[in-house]
Amino acid sequence: MVSKSQTKLITSLQQKKYRDQTGFFVAEGPKVIAELINEGIELQWLFTVDQSEIVDENHFLVDEKALKKLSFLKTANTSVAVFKIPKNESIKNTGLTVVLDAVRDPGNLGTIIRLCDWFGIQQLVCSKDTVDCYNPKVVQATMGSLARVAVHYTSLPEFLNNTTQKTYGACMDGNNIYSEKLPNDAVIVMGNEANGISEEIMNMLNQKLTIPRFGETQRAESLNVATATAIFLSEFRSATEK
Image 1 (spheres, rainbow, N blue to C red):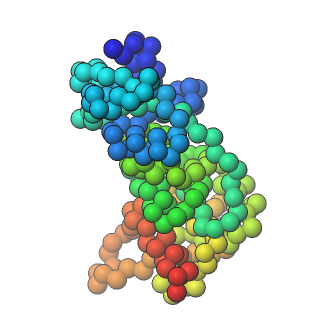
Image 2: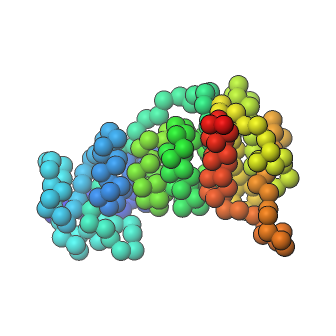
Protein backbone atom coordinates (compact mmCIF):
# COMPACT_ATOMS: atom_id res chain seq x y z
CA MET A 1 0.00 0.00 0.00
CA VAL A 2 1.00 3.61 -0.55
CA SER A 3 0.63 5.65 2.62
CA LYS A 4 -1.36 8.88 2.68
CA SER A 5 1.78 10.85 3.51
CA GLN A 6 3.63 9.33 0.55
CA THR A 7 0.72 10.07 -1.78
CA LYS A 8 0.50 13.65 -0.53
CA LEU A 9 4.23 14.19 -0.96
CA ILE A 10 4.36 12.73 -4.46
CA THR A 11 1.33 14.71 -5.60
CA SER A 12 2.91 17.92 -4.28
CA LEU A 13 6.01 17.35 -6.42
CA GLN A 14 4.13 18.58 -9.48
CA GLN A 15 4.93 22.07 -8.14
CA LYS A 16 8.43 23.53 -8.12
CA LYS A 17 8.12 25.07 -4.66
CA TYR A 18 7.58 21.63 -3.12
CA ARG A 19 10.41 20.10 -5.15
CA ASP A 20 12.64 22.87 -3.78
CA GLN A 21 11.37 22.36 -0.22
CA THR A 22 11.70 18.58 -0.16
CA GLY A 23 14.63 18.06 -2.52
CA PHE A 24 12.71 15.35 -4.40
CA PHE A 25 11.48 14.88 -7.96
CA VAL A 26 9.38 12.26 -9.76
CA ALA A 27 10.21 10.05 -12.74
CA GLU A 28 7.92 7.54 -14.44
CA GLY A 29 8.41 4.42 -16.53
CA PRO A 30 10.98 1.63 -16.18
CA LYS A 31 13.36 3.00 -18.85
CA VAL A 32 13.65 6.50 -17.39
CA ILE A 33 13.84 5.18 -13.84
CA ALA A 34 16.52 2.61 -14.74
CA GLU A 35 18.62 5.27 -16.50
CA LEU A 36 18.53 7.53 -13.43
CA ILE A 37 19.39 4.69 -11.04
CA ASN A 38 22.23 3.46 -13.28
CA GLU A 39 23.74 6.96 -13.32
CA GLY A 40 23.76 7.12 -9.53
CA ILE A 41 20.77 9.38 -8.85
CA GLU A 42 19.62 8.47 -5.34
CA LEU A 43 16.27 6.65 -5.26
CA GLN A 44 13.87 7.35 -2.41
CA TRP A 45 10.95 5.10 -3.39
CA LEU A 46 9.85 3.02 -6.35
CA PHE A 47 6.20 2.03 -6.81
CA THR A 48 5.43 -0.51 -9.51
CA VAL A 49 2.78 -2.91 -10.75
CA ASP A 50 5.52 -5.25 -12.03
CA GLN A 51 6.72 -7.82 -9.49
CA SER A 52 10.02 -8.26 -11.38
CA GLU A 53 11.01 -4.67 -10.55
CA ILE A 54 10.92 -5.33 -6.80
CA VAL A 55 14.60 -5.80 -5.95
CA ASP A 56 15.11 -3.61 -2.87
CA GLU A 57 13.40 -2.64 0.37
CA ASN A 58 12.39 0.79 -0.94
CA HIS A 59 10.59 -0.83 -3.91
CA PHE A 60 6.86 -1.36 -3.43
CA LEU A 61 4.37 -3.45 -5.35
CA VAL A 62 1.06 -1.62 -5.91
CA ASP A 63 -2.03 -2.17 -8.01
CA GLU A 64 -2.90 -0.13 -11.10
CA LYS A 65 -5.44 1.98 -9.22
CA ALA A 66 -2.87 3.05 -6.64
CA LEU A 67 -0.27 3.76 -9.31
CA LYS A 68 -2.70 5.91 -11.26
CA LYS A 69 -3.15 8.15 -8.21
CA LEU A 70 0.61 8.73 -8.12
CA SER A 71 1.14 9.25 -11.84
CA PHE A 72 1.33 12.66 -13.52
CA LEU A 73 0.80 11.11 -16.97
CA LYS A 74 -2.54 10.89 -18.77
CA THR A 75 -1.95 7.17 -19.09
CA ALA A 76 0.06 5.80 -16.19
CA ASN A 77 3.16 3.76 -16.94
CA THR A 78 4.08 0.65 -14.94
CA SER A 79 6.16 2.46 -12.34
CA VAL A 80 6.58 5.77 -10.51
CA ALA A 81 9.75 6.69 -8.63
CA VAL A 82 10.80 9.48 -6.29
CA PHE A 83 14.45 10.57 -6.50
CA LYS A 84 16.59 12.99 -4.53
CA ILE A 85 17.63 16.05 -6.52
CA PRO A 86 21.42 15.82 -6.94
CA LYS A 87 23.74 18.71 -6.13
CA ASN A 88 25.69 20.08 -9.08
CA GLU A 89 29.31 21.12 -9.04
CA SER A 90 30.17 24.70 -10.00
CA ILE A 91 29.83 25.85 -13.62
CA LYS A 92 32.93 25.13 -15.71
CA ASN A 93 34.49 27.46 -18.27
CA THR A 94 35.68 24.77 -20.66
CA GLY A 95 34.27 22.92 -23.66
CA LEU A 96 30.92 23.69 -25.21
CA THR A 97 28.24 25.09 -22.95
CA VAL A 98 24.61 25.62 -23.96
CA VAL A 99 22.80 28.57 -22.35
CA LEU A 100 19.02 29.00 -22.37
CA ASP A 101 17.40 32.41 -22.05
CA ALA A 102 13.81 32.00 -20.75
CA VAL A 103 12.91 28.72 -22.45
CA ARG A 104 9.47 27.97 -21.01
CA ASP A 105 8.20 24.78 -22.66
CA PRO A 106 8.96 21.56 -20.72
CA GLY A 107 9.14 19.51 -23.91
CA ASN A 108 11.69 21.87 -25.41
CA LEU A 109 13.89 21.79 -22.32
CA GLY A 110 13.67 18.01 -22.09
CA THR A 111 14.64 17.64 -25.74
CA ILE A 112 17.54 20.09 -25.35
CA ILE A 113 18.85 18.10 -22.38
CA ARG A 114 18.74 14.96 -24.54
CA LEU A 115 20.57 16.82 -27.31
CA CYS A 116 23.26 17.92 -24.86
CA ASP A 117 23.70 14.30 -23.80
CA TRP A 118 23.87 13.14 -27.43
CA PHE A 119 26.47 15.73 -28.44
CA GLY A 120 28.54 15.34 -25.28
CA ILE A 121 27.64 18.68 -23.70
CA GLN A 122 28.15 18.16 -19.99
CA GLN A 123 26.50 21.30 -18.67
CA LEU A 124 23.49 23.44 -19.49
CA VAL A 125 23.17 26.94 -18.03
CA CYS A 126 19.64 28.34 -17.71
CA SER A 127 18.18 31.71 -16.81
CA LYS A 128 16.18 31.66 -13.60
CA ASP A 129 12.94 32.03 -15.58
CA THR A 130 13.62 28.93 -17.70
CA VAL A 131 11.32 26.01 -16.84
CA ASP A 132 12.56 23.79 -13.99
CA CYS A 133 14.49 20.75 -15.23
CA TYR A 134 12.81 18.63 -12.52
CA ASN A 135 9.33 19.47 -13.78
CA PRO A 136 7.77 16.01 -14.36
CA LYS A 137 7.20 16.76 -18.07
CA VAL A 138 10.83 17.76 -18.51
CA VAL A 139 12.06 14.65 -16.68
CA GLN A 140 10.02 12.41 -18.97
CA ALA A 141 11.16 14.23 -22.11
CA THR A 142 14.83 13.76 -21.20
CA MET A 143 14.44 9.95 -21.24
CA GLY A 144 17.14 9.66 -18.60
CA SER A 145 19.62 12.15 -20.09
CA LEU A 146 18.97 14.45 -17.13
CA ALA A 147 21.31 12.21 -15.12
CA ARG A 148 24.23 12.92 -17.47
CA VAL A 149 23.86 16.67 -18.01
CA ALA A 150 24.42 19.15 -15.18
CA VAL A 151 21.70 21.84 -15.34
CA HIS A 152 22.49 25.14 -13.62
CA TYR A 153 20.11 28.05 -12.96
CA THR A 154 21.76 31.43 -12.56
CA SER A 155 21.79 35.08 -13.59
CA LEU A 156 22.75 35.06 -17.27
CA PRO A 157 24.23 38.59 -17.25
CA GLU A 158 26.44 37.58 -14.34
CA PHE A 159 27.45 34.32 -16.02
CA LEU A 160 28.26 36.00 -19.34
CA ASN A 161 30.23 38.75 -17.62
CA ASN A 162 32.39 36.17 -15.88
CA THR A 163 32.94 33.62 -18.63
CA THR A 164 36.28 33.57 -20.45
CA GLN A 165 34.81 31.73 -23.44
CA LYS A 166 33.65 33.26 -26.71
CA THR A 167 29.87 33.65 -26.73
CA TYR A 168 27.54 32.98 -29.66
CA GLY A 169 23.81 33.61 -29.92
CA ALA A 170 21.13 32.17 -32.19
CA CYS A 171 19.11 34.90 -33.92
CA MET A 172 17.46 35.78 -37.22
CA ASP A 173 19.97 38.40 -38.37
CA GLY A 174 23.35 36.87 -37.54
CA ASN A 175 26.13 35.44 -39.68
CA ASN A 176 25.38 32.23 -41.59
CA ILE A 177 26.32 29.40 -39.24
CA TYR A 178 27.33 27.20 -42.20
CA SER A 179 29.97 29.74 -43.28
CA GLU A 180 31.62 30.32 -39.90
CA LYS A 181 34.68 28.67 -38.42
CA LEU A 182 33.37 27.41 -35.09
CA PRO A 183 35.42 26.51 -31.99
CA ASN A 184 35.00 23.53 -29.68
CA ASP A 185 35.33 25.78 -26.64
CA ALA A 186 32.43 28.26 -26.57
CA VAL A 187 29.11 29.35 -25.08
CA ILE A 188 26.01 28.94 -27.27
CA VAL A 189 22.96 30.96 -26.23
CA MET A 190 19.46 29.95 -27.35
CA GLY A 191 16.44 32.17 -26.74
CA ASN A 192 12.82 32.11 -25.69
CA GLU A 193 10.30 30.31 -27.93
CA ALA A 194 8.37 33.48 -28.80
CA ASN A 195 10.86 36.32 -28.36
CA GLY A 196 14.29 34.81 -28.90
CA ILE A 197 17.28 36.08 -26.91
CA SER A 198 16.52 39.13 -24.78
CA GLU A 199 18.07 42.45 -25.84
CA GLU A 200 20.16 42.62 -22.67
CA ILE A 201 21.72 39.21 -23.30
CA MET A 202 22.10 39.80 -27.05
CA ASN A 203 24.16 42.92 -26.37
CA MET A 204 26.58 40.88 -24.28
CA LEU A 205 27.39 38.30 -26.97
CA ASN A 206 30.54 38.21 -29.08
CA GLN A 207 28.84 36.96 -32.22
CA LYS A 208 25.36 36.36 -33.62
CA LEU A 209 24.66 33.32 -35.77
CA THR A 210 21.66 32.35 -37.84
CA ILE A 211 20.41 29.23 -39.59
CA PRO A 212 19.54 30.44 -43.10
CA ARG A 213 16.22 29.64 -44.74
CA PHE A 214 16.41 27.69 -48.01
CA GLY A 215 12.70 27.58 -48.85
CA GLU A 216 11.71 29.39 -52.05
CA THR A 217 9.04 31.52 -50.38
CA GLN A 218 11.19 32.41 -47.32
CA ARG A 219 7.98 32.59 -45.31
CA ALA A 220 8.81 30.23 -42.45
CA GLU A 221 8.88 32.54 -39.44
CA SER A 222 11.30 30.65 -37.22
CA LEU A 223 12.55 27.26 -36.02
CA ASN A 224 11.54 25.56 -32.80
CA VAL A 225 14.24 26.25 -30.19
CA ALA A 226 15.02 22.57 -29.69
CA THR A 227 15.34 22.04 -33.45
CA ALA A 228 17.61 25.08 -33.72
CA THR A 229 19.72 23.78 -30.82
CA ALA A 230 20.17 20.46 -32.61
CA ILE A 231 21.45 22.23 -35.74
CA PHE A 232 23.78 24.48 -33.73
CA LEU A 233 25.28 21.58 -31.80
CA SER A 234 25.69 19.53 -34.95
CA GLU A 235 27.51 22.40 -36.66
CA PHE A 236 29.77 23.15 -33.70
CA ARG A 237 30.65 19.48 -33.30
CA SER A 238 31.18 18.86 -37.02
CA ALA A 239 33.43 21.93 -37.22
CA THR A 240 35.78 20.41 -34.66
CA GLU A 241 35.91 17.13 -36.58
CA LYS A 242 37.00 18.70 -39.90
